[in-house]
Length: 110
Image 1 (cartoon, rainbow, N blue to C red):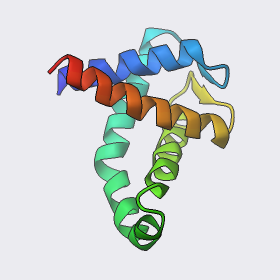
Image 2 (image 1 turned 180 degrees about the horizontal axis):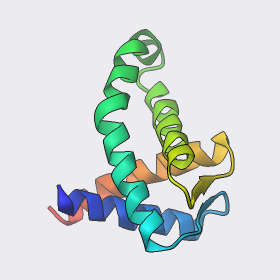
Image 3 (image 1 turned 90 degrees about the horizontal axis):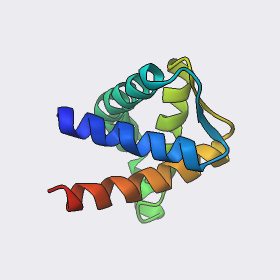
Image 4 (image 1 turned 60 degrees about the horizontal axis):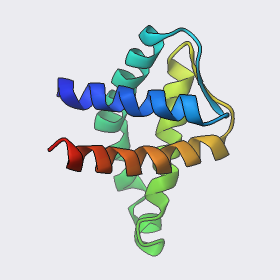
């Protein structure tokens, strides 16, 4: 679990560094807190939303999950001081890239 948390923090750092619409202003504290809160939101709230939106997910062949992931990133930005996302579009791009990097790094570090 600690390994996953640090992996998420590294991915968030890379995305905040590489994307104009994502920023971390309070240093490592905000970065680590954002990774922890994102993990908590994904573990508790995301499954409930996935179940509620299951019909939409089925119709869109699972692509609506990317919208849900973007909403989870925006929720994290709303909760964590020092972590911000400029718009839903940036949250969506962040969610897509976060998913890609997460899978890739998980496979590499397995």
